[in-house]
Image 1: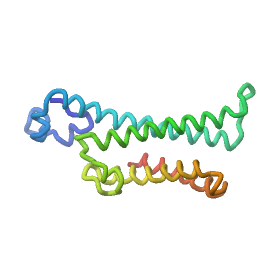
Image 2: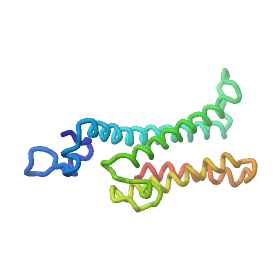
Image 3: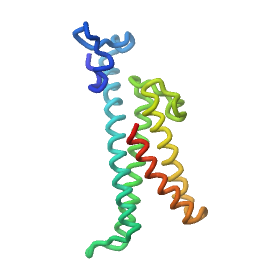
Image 4: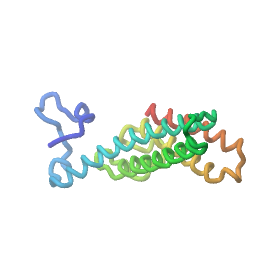
Length: 171
């Protein structure tokens, strides 16, 4: 039976010829095993894409703030690109979190996805991800309430979101 590549070191027995799988996984039907692998790859892939897109959104935000503009670009181009890349990165973040919650390999569950250090699967990196998720939720909420909370508060939370991406990258 195949095991996701990064976990081979965790489940490989030095005396065994193949990976040592838990009983429940060793007897799972072929279709369930395929779904498990799809969820495993979806979790990692969506997380990586989300992190790259958040980085791109940050760069586009900085380009917007500095008012950089190429000669042929419309004035709204930088802002709209920042906004759209940010929305796409939030979509990939949602896929990442949901795939991790439903992935039986990690057995996170909804509680571990919402409470830092509640996970039995790699507790510290998952805790960093949960904290970053809360910072991104704060970023989304303040962006939606920008007119009501003021420019200064909105900007402070926006700068904190960069820290959220760094925290998540550490994990």
